[in-house]
Structure formats: structure tokens, C-alpha cells
Length: 236
Image (cartoon, rainbow, N blue to C red; front, side, top):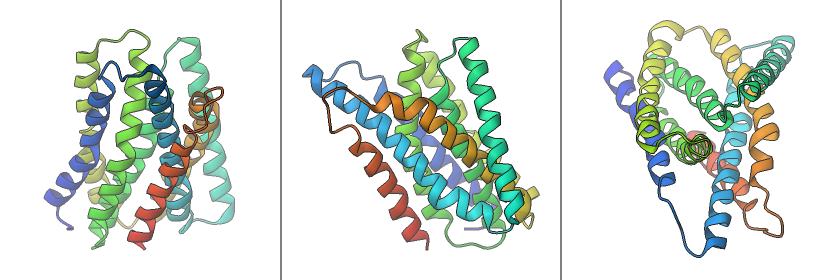
């Protein structure tokens, strides 16, 4: 699967779960109320665990493979600082978009890497696309709930999320045509994203997963990380 058409199909598969997660999040009520609350926070934690898995198992190992230590530290730190600045900017404009930012920060570099890897004749494209798709599902769910809580209409959000899914093919083809063989550039992008995602997990996502006197939501983080681990083991 190393043709442009295959990359388009794989990245569309990976991105399609963004609007699918939003569609699932648009379901209004789950009864009883305690189950809805536990489920919502479980999904938030699951998305955080999937993002943590993306950092620990994909972005940092793959990103650091072709870079010296000082560049690894530099790009990771710059990503954290840049996302801190973005978080401050969003807060000043009262924009609830931290989950969306984290989702795109994960999706874009992985799609770039998928396209670049396919150009090199890699055979892991399908498994990587499935892993990205499974990560995007809870992240799309959480981002939809977060933005809709600010009053955004459901139909507009679902349309926007469907358009965001098209970033997958765009980034995949960019990686295929422009980044193949430029491992240092891909590595810098991945480490920058990893630093930013780690900041967002502990600034915005993890605090939202906690519910007083409820103990099951944190298991979502464990399940999300295990999802990434299984995908990494399959890739390995």
C-alpha cells in the first residue's frame, strides 16, 4: 500500500472516525444519569490515554530516531511552550477547543508520517491507519462535547468535523510527496506535537476526567493507553 490512492483511502479511514465520534457524542441522554456521567468522563480519560499512547509509543520513539539528543529536547520543549501559548490564547478568547487541538495535534503528524512511510515502501500503513482511527474516535467524541457545551449547533459541528477528516488525505499526500526521505523534518514535527499534547493532557484533559467519588472513569486512560500499546505491538 504505497500508492497515492492507497494513502488517500487509509487516511480517509483514519479521519472518518472524527465525525463518527462527534455523531456518537450528539446522542443527548443515557439513563440512568450516573451512567451518563461515568461514561462521559470515561471517554474523556480514554481519549487522554490514547493521546498518551501516541506520545509514548509513536511520536517520541519515531520522532527521536533520526535526531540528536539536543534537538529532541529542543523540539519537545518548544512544542510544550507553543501549546501553552495557544492554551492561554484560547482561554482569553473563552474558546473551549483544547480537546480539538489535542486531537489535531495527534492526527496531523501521524498522517504526515503515514504518507512518508508509504513512500518508502512500508507495509504497516493499514495497521497505523487503524490505530489513528481508533484514537480519533474518543478524541472526536470529547472535542464535540467540549465545543457543544459552549453553545455551538450540532449540525454545524458535525459538518466541521467531517471537513477536518479531509486533513488526513491532505497531510498523507504531503508526507508522501514532500517529506519522504526527510526523516529529521518528520521527527521534529512529531516531537513538537508530542510536547504540545503532553502539556494539553495535564492542563485540560486529565482534570476533566476526574469525578468525585467515582472510580471507573480513570480506567478509560488505562484502556486508551492499552489501545495504543496493542497497535504498537502489531506494528512491531
